[in-house]
Image (cartoon, rainbow, N blue to C red):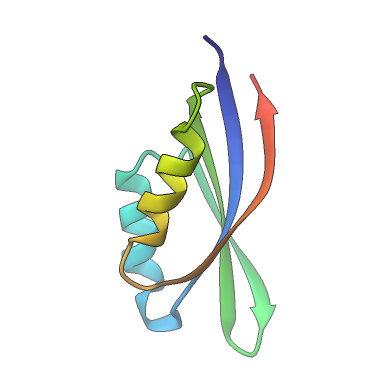
Length: 81
């Protein structure tokens, strides 16, 4: 089995941004970059490397959605490693 690098765009509540970043690191984020959207809103571009087994991506996405302070999540891309 191979691995997949998945990039998520996570929009946290502004007051919870650092807590969300910490939780994403606990979930295994390989890289987190901040991207200013505007009006004081910052999105996080988060890279995860996961196995390419069926259901792994959905499982990770559900875990990210459950993090307290996450407003929205969007998959920006996948790349087979």
